[in-house]
Image (cartoon, rainbow, N blue to C red; front, side):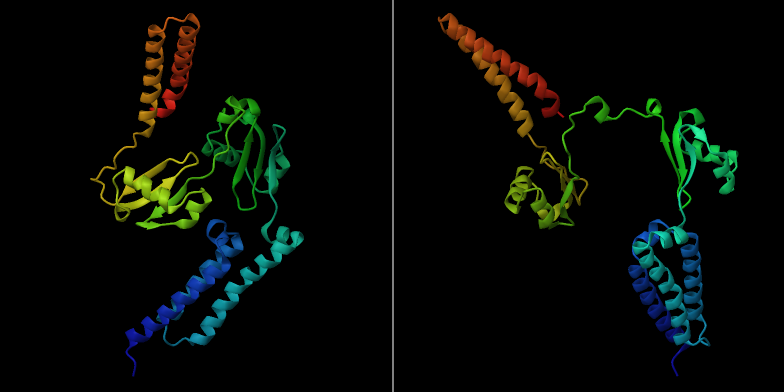
Length: 287
């Protein structure tokens, strides 16, 4: 006779594994965006699974069959939705426009059973306190409210001030938990030799690195396991700035040692050019 606690433990373990596999099949969308029906399915499946774990009188096969049916239905509907727009609109619904061209569409508010008080409350949650600031607003199929402000009320972005913005890629994690990740390195056009050289400059052993990331400019940031240890700061930028200053000073000195007016002017012009370059680069190199 199997002890009761052993049977409950085995049943629970099997159900947990089954629910994990079902969750993987349903995909990540289920975690971020649940429709009303999917929410009900999740509660029902959880209730069935919990009851099967504790109630020894219930037939496990029948319970698993019920869980599979409840779980497969949203999986099947999602696959059909991917291929059929009309079916997707029927299952998930369409977005409803609340504001168009700065005008509130009262009939759409009533259609979605939204009072003006509720609408204003949702706007305040988005730090919008005046309806006059809105160009377009829509209620998404998952219940989220999306709002587009009028151009004059939108905050200025870096692109507005500087049209020629360089293309930046996301930082790549090249070391995680002390292990080198070769794929992100190759995406940056780098290799392990470069990484070893960067760690050597900082006097860091790879075993001490918790995480290291490289940005679009090739700069690497490092976080160590031991927070009391400090990575040696990179000095290449400061050395570059010091070299520019030294070259400008040397050229200015050479201009005083020559007699030729033409050569003196050339040295002074070169020194002034280097000083100008140094002024432009100083904010970047000292940052």
